[in-house]
Length: 221
View 1 (tube, rainbow, N blue to C red):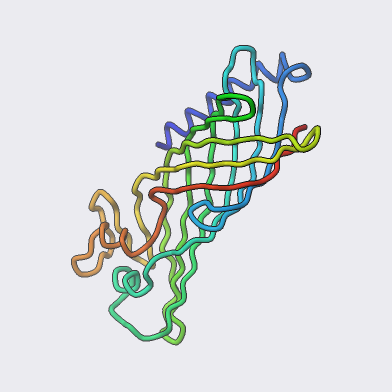
View 2 (cartoon, rainbow, N blue to C red):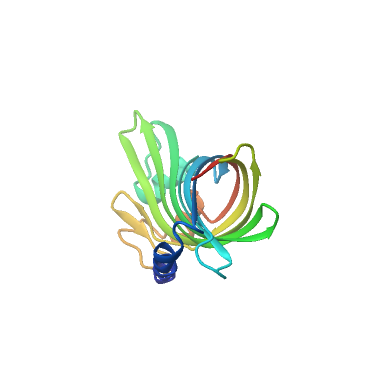
């Protein structure tokens, strides 16, 4: 997936090069936006779009970065799988997700666009056992792919109201916690007892099937 993502970025760069040289003043337009809503949890997203890149090129390009707060998983199970069998302390938990996305947008009709593209996320689950002397993170970096639909409604000459619905699928990746890791290929480091990746995967809520429903504003330059 990393090679696919890099290939997409190279393709975008190649597409943009002649556009900037030939059509910058006459064709290409830019927009920036911010969205808020649900993205595997309460989330926010900023993005930058390039439209009308070249004559005959049917897609707009959108690059985005997002941040979400989410339920990280099950503290007691995560502690047992990644740390030890202790049960003391009052568990507290917090989860966050940083995601990067690149999308190709195709105009379906009017101001409605279908989009698809690669994804990369950095997931962190924090489990803190107050009074139990355990405070640790479980992390995972994952590649994925997404699809969705966006609708734009012009509310001023330069500002759009934007609605976005989407679905992202993420591929399994190594889960790291403390000095232990579990890999989907069975390559574990300092694994405890007979725990497997499947056990760790059930204990924490790293992205798998991600639904997105967000609303925001876009500014057209």
